[in-house]
Length: 530
Image (cartoon, rainbow, N blue to C red; front, top):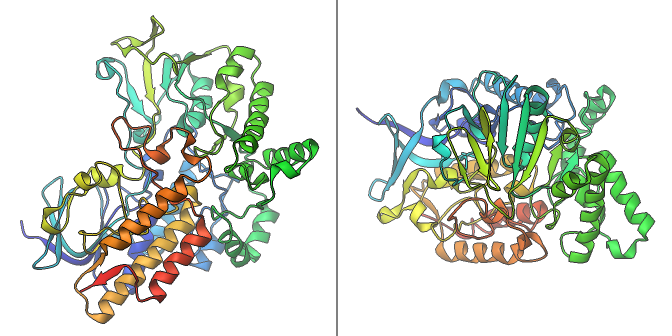
């Protein structure tokens, strides 16, 4: 089978891959996208579990590169559900005729760089070979499912579903005894829906998570008009905030506020809902005593919402609030007031095993008909290391990252010429509103490709010193404040055997964007072109 030849091959047809396809076309370069799914959408194609919904408000979780697109699209709700986000992705694909350059149902198995030809050879699971001068992994930060290591997991004889690999057809839980393992974001979203349908639901919780109410509602048409009339201003304002969200940030210390002022600030953010809760004061992620006050406010809200005092206490997190990405909930805590739900705390005493009939914990067998695994993802690195990527001198990316990854700006790695990553480790990515962050990365990569093309360069590669210095900087920032005080997927703690390092960049969107601009202005400082 002869290999196909392209200037650029992109892996992944989510929001990153689609926009990069659009940008590369405009450079006049030949391009192909390889996508494992049968349609566009990325994480919103795969994550179809009940209640799947974005935790960023719809009017901000959208592309901004085309104003006509911004103006024409209508979001039905304040926080968009998975089906509506998938429709949006499909609309973008149709609007810009993207599908003709995408190979669907094609999973990349390996990628090897040939030094002599400066060509990447990409081989799919079906042995189809594609050659590319430039190779971009646009596979997302949360796309490689994480399966828990529990004895007997494969012995269960009933249906087993992972929230990250949900069937495309509806799963009927009626009259079923269901077990959910995990209480992260996907569980917090799906549990209320499953509980309303199932005969009985047992939730196995290792670590409770903080969840802030979404206060979701139908889209306010007047607000939509107002935002669309001043979209450019709102987008610019968002880029000045640490997370790239148009939320008012109070930089003052909680210790300079009276108790009434503290409660008012938290209550204001609680009633607004969503990820902006931690913007109430500037030192909540820097000072443990400040964080304790915020955490207790949320715990008291949980106690108000859950009728049974013991269940409420079991649902109250005791770790640092904000050290994990906050969850955004719709009726999660209230669901535990139902008669058909049971919470089993397995934090101190883990699940013993899964049998053919159910889940054994605390010396008891919980018999169930259906098992739902809601244990999240091998975040930020899993989608990269699960492909056999080999750079110069057969250097293995998975082997190189065995003790923790390192990148330059989350964009490129030394010894892997002409390979770029969109929102890779070492970039703000999951600490931000992902759509604007994706666009910034794609624009940077496309501009770099255009520079290489115009100057006649064969390769571009991160320099070793630049990568080492950047990664050391990322680790220093990660250790400032309270981010590493809690086991989280930010440090790889949710995956058994994964190296514990701080994966994202914690310096905020403005500083990161400025760094990327400075690199270009200084002649692509830290990159070697040959």
